[in-house]
Length: 217
Image 1 (cartoon, rainbow, N blue to C red):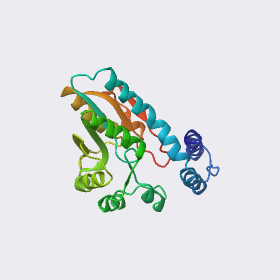
Image 2: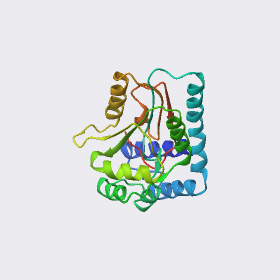
Image 3: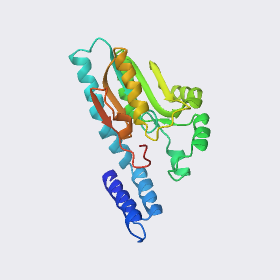
């Protein structure tokens, strides 16, 4: 499903750039397809399938013997916390101002498959670092949101600095992982819903979760 949506979206963009023809597929219909895919239970099933290898990899690392300074890295939105009500109400268009208001209401829900991986790491005494694209202005709300959703015991929470100007999240997120590596941490797994959560190295293994609802370069 996700691959089909991505392919269709790319074809639509290509059509916009090279021909005067009406883009296809229709954006409204594509959004409806995304909602139907989510509401049918297919998203939850795909999410659980994608999270299972991360849990298996972490179990194997614990079983086989951890390095001197192990660590685990997670993104937050659509990785540990679901913002589905916000996404639907805003037709998948993320506006910084309205998303900040949503974040301050602290209503995002835990995603159970990745929470299980998070809890496993914490129970094993492995430091957990959260690297989110949320702005630093949402630190207090994010901490409250995480705690309300049952996430406790993380070691570090990194939010995007207010002066960050790059269009891609990759330099920011990989830069934090580079800092952790420089401190001696060996990142066993890095889990996120965007390729930009994972690109740039500094993790033994990466695990991509499904998210056809929005894209962050």
